[in-house]
Image 1: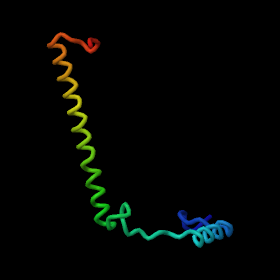
Image 2: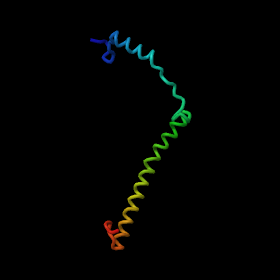
Image 3: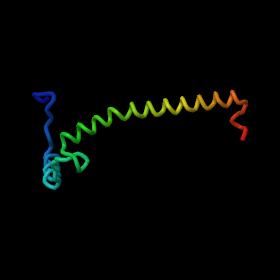
Image 4: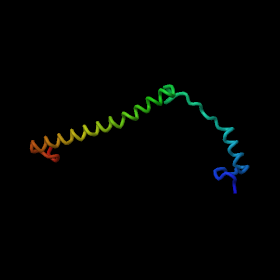
Length: 85
């Protein structure tokens, strides 16, 4: 049984595999968001866009429903149906 329950003994092949992967993979240093903004300002901008986008889409859908309902009401008042051309 291990002394620390969260600590597991690694096999030699596992350790060798990790060393081989770490030596062959280059970890990029991120300094830009979306390749154009500095990272901090870019992430803040991205977050604000993600906050505003659902509100915009909800408003757009609500306006579409309102227009569809008002169009249906006008057609009922005029005596026309959706099948009439």
